[in-house]
Amino acid sequence: MDLELSGKRALVTGGSRGIGKAIARVLAQEGASVALLARDAATLQAAAAELAAETGRSVLGVVADTRDDAAVQAAVAQAMAGLGGSIDILVNAAAEPAGYAGPPKLGEITGAFFQGELDTKVMGYIRCSQAVVPGMRAASWGRIVHVSGLAARQTGNTVGSIRNVAVAALAKNMADELGPVGIQVTVVHPGITRTERTAPLVAARAAAQGVDPAALEAQMAAGNSIQHLVDATEVAWVVAFLCSPKSRAINGDAVCVGGGAPKAIHY
Image (tube, rainbow, N blue to C red; front, side, top):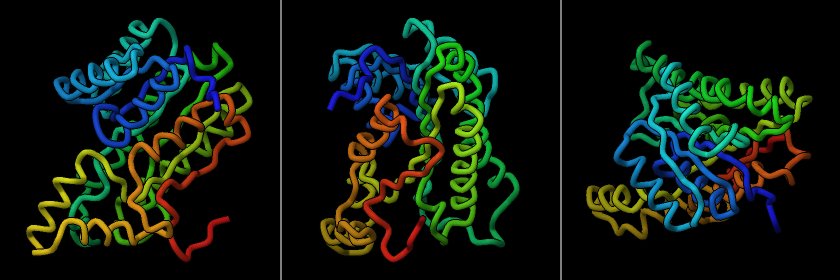
């Protein structure tokens, strides 16, 4: 299937590693020119060079902390200049990983921690959207995909759930506002996902617990109904479709990419 992404200009925040980098790779493979936005300049430039060499597409890195309004505006302007025009596709994936060990219990949640999480993942997504939407409006076309997470539908991480529910609410509000002018917005909910960080983390935890890494990974995979640890590239293919003109029938909805959380029914 041709996803009709050739010639599109995409901005992927959090694009220097993990799910964001996998999404950027697939978009470039499908013919898009891609700007990666992240905070660490060295990691960012290395990722951009790697993806450009792999795909033969124009891939550049722009440095910004999505908590900083001016930095986001400057980075988006740099991306547009480097890619040769306004941004057609925005994928928001810049956030602290939700899978950190031991999320804080109720009595341990501080205001600074809570506000920092929301500023990065919710307000950060808003800032990046605000920077690209004027160009999409002018073109009467655009795709915005917010990467959230299955903590939106599960307990066990209070702040993680709150920030992810907020991202889903943001996507639907944006979709209703922007859909009439040709800009479609969706949200994807990954679960536990294999990235470049997975192997060393599994090895360290397996050593600490005195178990075989393969057994620990199988335990992680058992958390979904396909009994398979979803890879970041598998998430990226779903996102690439949502970025495509072929996804026109989908707007404002949440798409889960966690391999099927068992038992719960969402309708």
